[in-house]
Amino acid sequence: MLHHEISGKGEENLVLLHGFMENSEIWKFLEPHLSKKFKIIKIDLPGHGKSKNFAEIHSMEMMAKEVERVISFLNLEKTHLLGHSMGGYVSLAFAELFPEKLKSLTLFFSTFFADDEDKKEQRRKSFRVIKDAFVHYVNVGIPNLFNPNDKDFLEGKINFAKDIALSTDNSGVLAAVKGMIERTDKLEILKNLDAKILVLCGKHDSAVKTEKTIKNLPDKTNLKSYVLDCGHMGQLEKPEICAAIINTELLHHLPKHFIF
Image (cartoon, rainbow, N blue to C red; front, side, top):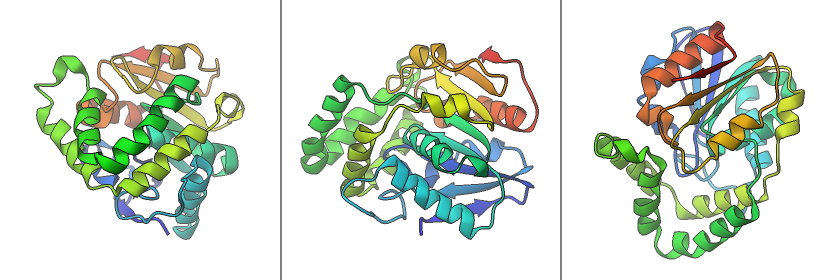
């Protein structure tokens, strides 16, 4: 079973799924600002953190099934599910497989789009670098996920993200990359999902096409979207603002679209 940690005694279950080359530690700066009404369940996805590798390819569907095993083991009823980046892709696969178990779905600096051919080719080219020069891969890639205008201010958190990435077994990293290449477009899942949908994006996100994602979101009363003045790592760049949106939106209500 996937490694997981539980904090808080709230009545609302909030499951947090980290992104690529991350683990449950990535929520360190966000978690203190989340409402005490939440019981927080942080899960290490396959091949990341303290969770073992499962296969040569970790598909989003396979990872979603492993997340569901944890949720069932903990006897959780409907949950709020929040996924950052790759964790968002896993959350969408979960919504496709187990929609009845969701109270809400939050795409946290993530997207419902599948990789286009250029992105797939970029991922394929990374295989060798991950195998043979993983430290270089991390040191070059991680800083690019942050708002370039704030890199000096964010140096400590960039190094924090690097340390987490470097602690990830590169075989788990490879399995995740291969799984992300295979993932399919999930727009229809968002269109048909009855649970509340929350989308947080970064204006300076180099990993997710924010404008395209926001523009193509379905027009639904149960969907809210927010664009923040940050890069891809909102939980590190803007933890207080992200938590305020999550607390207010999942527990209360805000206008349909909002820009911070």
